[in-house]
Image (cartoon, rainbow over all chains, first blue to last red):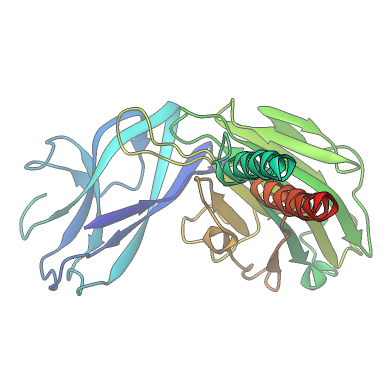
Length: 102
Length: 228
């Protein structure tokens, strides 16, 4: 899967950063299982719209649900990420497909 | 005959050098330059005014320097009012001339109100184009954002999928084009604001080099004719 990551928008009132990540299925066939975006090694920030923390992929990392039903070949889905930060936000983003706990 | 050969050889050498200069890559990525127009008719009698123009350059991974220069501000039917509502980070200039945002702070921002009669606001944008490709983790680009603030200095709601309520977002990267700049429209209770983006091509060093090569070629032909 391919990730297209935007820059941040800063909200002065809430001191939060927001961005979008678009996940594209570049495989020749569909993905039928749920897709999650995992923020491995997230530092200097808290992902405020996290759906939870991972158990099996970069354990302890926050994640968001990209698609409950997967993605057709060539299809994309975009998610919004919201952070509070204490410095330059850094993480290694990865898309994970699994029927179970990410 | 000998003179002609010498002139021909030196001309070819000169032309070759000029063409090599013309085709050589620039020392840095080309800037993205475009005109941005905000259509503000719908805000004319909106009780959430007065509204403000908000310009923001947010640092991404923080490993490269980018700069956004905003100039040629035109307020159709109105004008900027008072002094800036706020400034933040590395921001210089004013709406009367130009504003420069540099990404040395996490948030580099300028906001100033405009009068209620303003139906359209346009300006020129010049973004440097340095990609965030180095460092650890997923590279996050620097991003230039444009928003309209209401009288509480909150972004008016827009279709921006990030939830940041911008009207324009440009994730800065090398070789970016106008097509990569995202434009959105406003939503209720401030619906009706739309954006137009248009290219403003600038002469590149390569084009100037090719032009110089053509002039040199013409001069060479004329000189050879004189010698013959």
